[in-house]
Length: 206
Image (cartoon, rainbow, N blue to C red):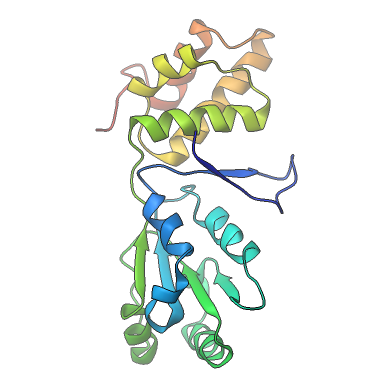
């Protein structure tokens, strides 16, 4: 499993690591190479629950006096003039600015802001492949203290959705059913969780 440690995340207050795989490896690499960013700015987009905020926290946590980092999460919710002001301020201070938004497209009305962000580095988190989905399942289970073994991942991954949010929902459902049945997660619980999350067809996104 290839992961970044997040030193600021205390256990019990959310994930303490980021699973890095095909969907986000290019993002992780770009966050470590801010000298290559146009306008010292990158725009990060992606599906809900895909780790955008975790990557932003990791990015800010790796700020130093020599390489100052700032992140604006849920940027699409800010007034555009405020976001433009913060972009200008980062330029004045020489700060590397990561702007995190939801799934594209992001319709920006303010022409100056649209041109600045349009010329910035564009980063988008994609869909996990089998290897990353496996790592995500096992990492999410570990965060919950849920004993999922490799054979569980072998069974679940081919039948699970390739949405990071639905993988998280699947692990949460396994955890809930295990507690309700007062039993460790087994084949019956895996199947019931898949049915609850995806329906009895157990569809797979390819």
